[in-house]
Image 1 (tube, rainbow, N blue to C red):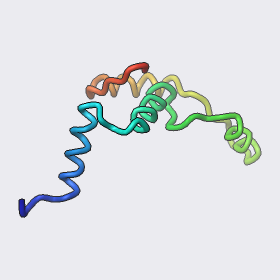
Image 2 (image 1 turned 135 degrees about the vertical axis):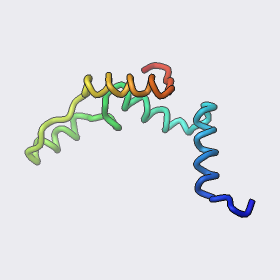
Image 3 (image 1 turned 180 degrees about the horizontal axis):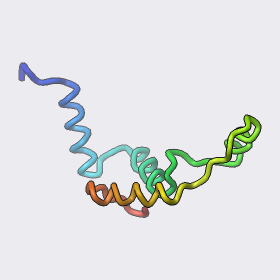
Image 4 (image 1 turned 45 degrees about the vertical axis):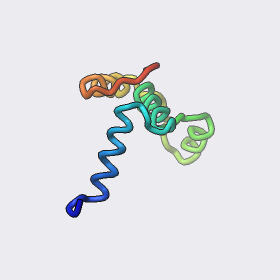
Length: 83
């Protein structure tokens, strides 16, 4: 169609693929990580050691944020196994 916006087409196809469980595995891994810890990536000892050297506080799992994100996920229809 003449008036089709390519970005809109791709976004709709991506949304549909996610709804059907066809997203890349990395998307599910990051989503589970965020829902379970409140953080987008695993905080290892090295990261916290580097932060300490820079005078920054250590990062850790944020249970309150994790609970809030799970509530949002549930209310918006996001269902993840193992969260």
